[in-house]
Length: 113
Length: 112
Image (cartoon, rainbow over all chains, first blue to last red; front, top):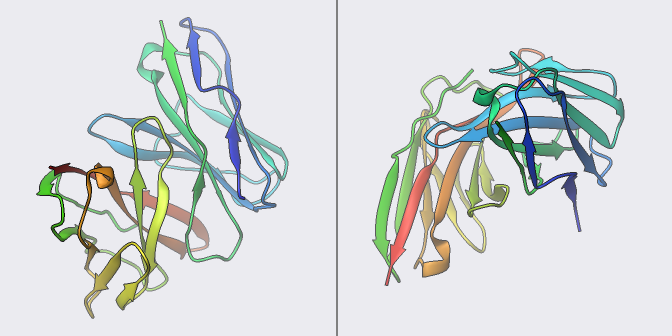
């Protein structure tokens, strides 16, 4: 069974802290994505990676960075967390060349105080 | 990139057929249309995907007109467990990059 695992389901951080959200997939997928989900705004793409060490900005990359050193792992980094980054973060993966099915993790709910 | 528009919410009764329409006027030639279902505190999960005309699987049907500027997800005989948010997603390998744009979702509430 396919699996996308996000390291933390719930995190509470303070303003200015550096935050790492980890995502691991066991399906050997080339493409990985980070979305954030907020009430009334749906899912918005932050960053995606179509292969190891490759990354591309999504629609809302400001305040975030990513790292893809290994194929199975895609990390989202908040260099200096702010309260407006309180949100649900969803990681997804898909194989290269497929027509679109994304496999999602369960999500990480981040609260920044 | 194709922006998608869906109704914010819909109510239905158990046993009825539910149709949710998504508008995507700027869909690109390479884009596919995919629908996802999301329950609270879970990630979205795939329901159905299509490129044109009609696609049917064991849980839903997807109708796409010839101009592909919209699509309709059809859920036959809904039950209470179909209460969820449904997202329309348009995307593919467009202009040398993979990007998938979600709509804001339709919150479906199924009533007994």
